[in-house]
Every structure is written in C-alpha cells, then in structure tokens.
Length: 409
Ligand SMILES: [Zn+2]
Image (cartoon, rainbow, N blue to C red):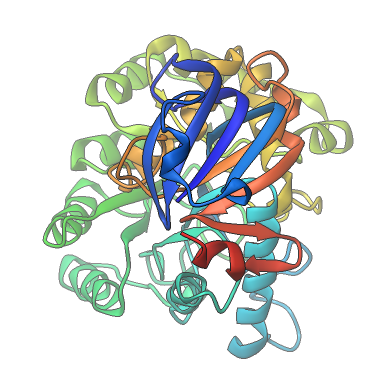
C-alpha cells in the first residue's frame, strides 16, 4: 500500500476538489481517496510508502482520445521512397508512447495503425516491456478502396467487405473500430475532406460489428453528410467534426444540434501545433475551425480531448508530447480550466470505452494518476509541470518503468 498526498486532489468527479488530500493505492488499484489522514498510517508499511507533495495537485491521468503513434510527423507514409519496416516502425511507436506518457497521458486511443502494431505495442506496455500509456487500439481504419489512409490495410467498400475487415480487426484484438466516413487531407489521390466515403448503412454495419464485442466506433468525419451519417449510424465518437466544405469550414448549427441531442462524443482534434500553424499558414482557416469548436460547446456537444498527434499539419510537427498545448486550444475556444480537465480525463475515458477503469480517482479503478507542481485549476499551463506519472500504479519516468516502486504494493 502507498499513500500519495498533495495540496490539492482533483478526484475527476466533476467539480470535486480535495484541499490537502490523499490517495491510497494498493498495487495497480486505487483503494480510497479523501482528506489527509483518512487512510490512516496503519494502511502503509513504513514511512517510505507515503509520498508527500506539498505545492502539488494530484489528478487522474490524462487521456488522448486520438493519436497515431505510428507516424513521425516528417514523412508521408505512402510516398516515402523506402518504406519503413514494421520492426523499425514498432520501435518508433514505442518512443512516441514514451513521450506521450511523459506528458502525463496515461490512456491513449490509437486511431489507426498498420499491421496490428498498435496491438503489439499495447500488450508490450502492459507487460512492462515498453514505457507508455494504456493503449486503446483501433488497428486498421476501415476506408474505401484508395480512400483516406488506405495504406493501413483496412480497405472495404460494401457491407460484406466492411464486416469482414471489422471482424478481422476484432479477432486481432482491437479495442474499438475506426471508420473513415469522409475523405481527408493526408492521403495522395484519396477523396478530399468534404467528400463522404461511406454512407449511413455502411457505418451502421461497423457499429453492429463493434457491438458484438461490446466495443465502440470512432468515425473520422469532416464533411457535413459524413457527420450526419455518423450520428444516424450511432457511432460513439466523431473525429474532427470540422464541417468542411470545398470553400473551408462552414459550421451548421442544425447539424451540431443533432450531434448534441444524440449524445455522440466529438473529438475536434485540437493540438499543440495550432498556434504555429496559424502563424505559418494564416489565421482565417484555423479561426473558422476554432469558432466551430466554441459553437459546438455552446450547443451542448460532448467534446473530448484528442490531438491527432503523429500527423504533420502543413509540414508542422504535431508531437506526442505537445498534449497540453491541445488543452490550451480548448481554453482559446472558451472552455474553463475545470471543464478542460473534465474533457481530458473522465469524459474522454468514457468516450474511449474505459470509463469503468480510468478517468477518475475512484476506489477500484486503475491507479492512473499524475502530480503536477502548482494548480492547473488556476493556471492550465501547470499541467506541463509533471513530477509524477503512475500508470496502473507503476511510476513512469524518462528512464523507464520504475519496477521497484511497482512491486512495493
Ligand atoms: Zn487521425
């Protein structure tokens, strides 16, 4: 048993803050959370098992609901001259996972990887062979032949083909399914963002297959028609939801109301490279996009944090350890700090299908938590001052997993 004490503990239950609080942990699991002394000294074996963090805030580990650990920002995986081997790519993914967890992210949903490498990485992290967050793996995104991200291996056009790819992904161990409901920007020769790829019936087939294993579906949707189809099909999360048209972002209040009323989560994939892209590529497009995020918030859409880290945006790197920069974009879009922490923890965990085990500091959940110097409720940037990251009770640092600490429970 271990006790972690801090000046403030944010339990993850919306609005709940414990001044001078403590968390009691047994191995990989949270036993209790309460005011200092509630656990009683008898709960731990010795003094070394109490970690006192004055001036710090302890909160649930952060969730990135949309990453691509298999991309490196620099190169287009389709047109690069010598394709990277799976072996080399897996090592790159491990390094990206290490960077992500060092930023305080303890759960990451990988929404597209080739060769089931995300499954291999997920399992290696759980075994302690690699350092990273818990991974919720989508494996190969389902897309039309030659469509957005076809090169990850998930091409399927009609319903039988879609069901087959979905079942193969689930057989390989996918934790959720990803479908490309519209085109995108990153794949040469594929339909652009404003063109729908799969219709409502095809998306419904993906939702049905995922439901046979109790899993959710993430739908990549920029185009208006694709956003509507995703809602009608009953997907769990809509990715991007950018209301994109041939002439840029055109927010549609009626469509946003439909999304809000359905309860579908939206991951607008705001990220830490936002300001740099805005400077280099001009403000107009990004400001229209940001206005859409603000409007969705006001419409009552359930927004969640996710960065799309891994992809380059206009030649500018969107790095896995720039996670907090994405949260700062939510602040630019009008969110308060408590609300941002909620959409980055408990709400994102629910959206990723792991709300039963992660997202808040509740007894019985995984001991996924972080400590930061300062008070992120008062100053969001304090989330950058990460001094402790626990992933299922294991202390993670730049050097790797601290197995001594992990076995002390
Ligand atoms: Zn993505």
